[in-house]
Amino acid sequence: MTYSLILLAHGSSDPAWRAPFEHFHASLATRMQVPLKLAYMELSEPSLESSVAELASAGLRRADILPLFFAAGRHLRKDVPAQVEALRSSHPDIELRLLPPVGEHPAFIDALAAVVAEQAGEALST
Image 1 (cartoon, rainbow, N blue to C red):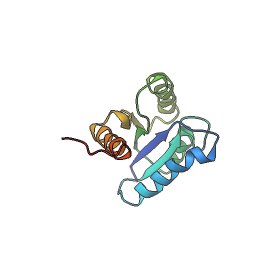
Image 2 (image 1 turned 45 degrees about the vertical axis):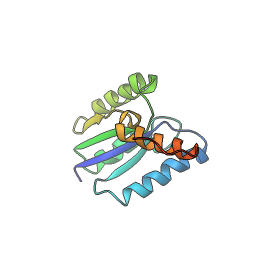
Image 3 (image 1 turned 90 degrees about the vertical axis):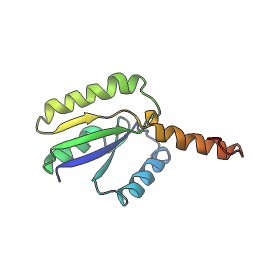
Image 4 (image 1 turned 120 degrees about the horizontal axis):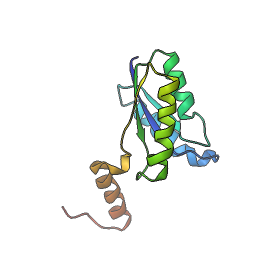
């Protein structure tokens, strides 16, 4: 393995909050060829730090980090980039790339709009 995609969620001490992310990860991992990891920014395990350390010990050369966030608020503007910089220092053999949050992707907006319209009992106009 030389590459992995890390799905990064915020994290919570409540296991019920984590369940949808764990289900999403498990479902997606069976449908993709790239190895997927689920990690949490804070309050939960596996943390981003422990996930990168595990991948480093497996000989990983590159990991893209995809935030499962709607928007780039303070966490994605400051906290996560600082975590990634610290990880680059502690694991210099791994190329870490922080991707934009899923909420900024046009397909995400379309999918979310379809769910909202369905819940409102409407069809989206094109």
